[in-house]
View 1 (cartoon, rainbow, N blue to C red):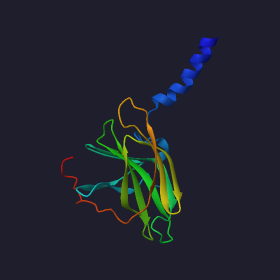
View 2: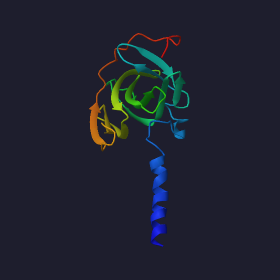
View 3: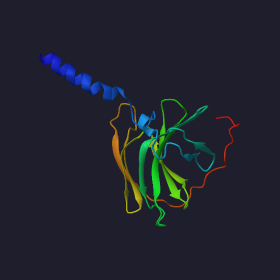
View 4: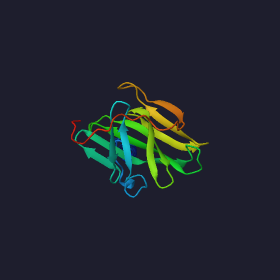
Length: 174
């Protein structure tokens, strides 16, 4: 009887462990979410690319971008319009991924992706909130294989539009 109770616990916990890390594969609940079908920009000062998410994902060659439902509303640029901070993950369509906090700023008509902050490689967002016009993000970051994850809390303030690199065309290689 004791063995069966232990096996029952393993069977209950196993699906959560085997299910994977949130943010790597888009959740089904991303469909219908307000940001599941939005346009965002991936890149940095050197090179960037505008992508249109459909049902929370974008795939083209070696670029995969996902929105998995982590978002918070607030007035991040202090203009009294409601903006959003959204967690977007991008990868080369392999096992590794990077998380980004994207600030979508309300231009009076729609939310426009104006800046991003890197949340880390293979990190996991555990908490996202708006506090006094800033985004509070808790993440678990695993520095080395086999090491225990480290809890990190950072507060991100919208500091104006990101200086994006030249727009990359779809005809250029990935």
